[in-house]
Length: 409
Ligand SMILES: Cc1cc2nc3c(=O)[nH]c(=O)nc-3n(C[C@H](O)[C@H](O)[C@H](O)COP(=O)(O)OP(=O)(O)OC[C@H]3O[C@@H](n4cnc5c(N)ncnc54)[C@H](O)[C@@H]3O)c2cc1C
Image 1: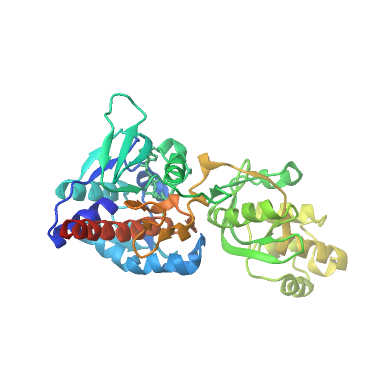
Image 2: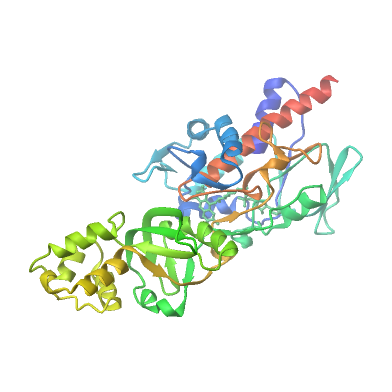
């Protein structure tokens, strides 16, 4: 995206530049291809700063405003990739094929004369007077010198695609810092053996509200979305969304906890009222109207309530215990599944070290930094690509302007 926008803006400004894209991966654009289950969730129909975490929302907003979701839709449409909106607000290519997104980008690079060298893995970037010398990890590639460099190496999620954190090292060697915490986000969670009953529900998916509570009981974050029970614990969009908030909270507060309301937005008090007015209806019959049968039975078992108990026969203690299990169910988490299973990285290079109007480095002239390597992570829904498109565009336009200025002086 950044290379395309640099080349387009250079043409507009009537300046010539040689643009070289170096990628260590054998297969270029691997993340685009795996994204959205192979369909690539390119963006979201409504992107707001609050859909992101990490850096200040104001700084994020500035970048998003410069190239918003409508601009993304138009950009891809002009490349022949029409996007469609799904009920969740996610935008996918009409073709349902991530390959169509990648091919469109590569064809546009080709049309604009952008050289793509891969596999060309960067091992070192050094400032040599007013140029950058980029050295490969492999002897067969000669070092290359450039007037400016863009770091777009991604974070650490799914390292086999090539984003393994090397970019942080490059940034540090050029005068940047990296947040103290760099951890997996949008990552499935492994449940502790104490809650092994959940693993027995493997395959069940239901809409629920997940909350992170501090040790003092304060609600720190909440998401309502699908939760998938698996053989190791929990996955699904709701769990992926809450994961970074839970993992972050746990680093400060060993007593922070994850709590699930299996009935979504129904409160404990509302449920208690409903259970009191069940009459002859059984608990299982009632619960099956809202949650899957196996989950309803498991929650009854955890509350020591026989599922066939008619509502009027529930004791107050039973009712309250069941109510807590259903609406404030604490889940003991052993760990996350790590970067191999994460979709994005939380933490990275602080946005305060970058000018958000250009994505240019404040620490090193001639360096631009974009995408997931920065301390910005979005929730599920196309927000992370939108960040990549927007920050890449802001940088591309700024690089072209700086080339034009350097020619003029
Ligand atoms: C399984 C999965 C599914 C996802 N689905 C979606 C989705 O549907 N929608 C969405 O918005 N987001 C999704 N994401 C997140 C999204 O893919 C990323 O946030 C986005 O790709 C980040 O873009 P980037 O250009 O910053 O980094 P990346 O896409 O990670 O690209 C970094 C590139 O840098 C290269 N590189 C790294 N180090 C070096 C080096 N030393 N030398 C040379 N090259 C190097 C890598 O090979 C890679 O090609 C998904 C992520 C995963 C893992």
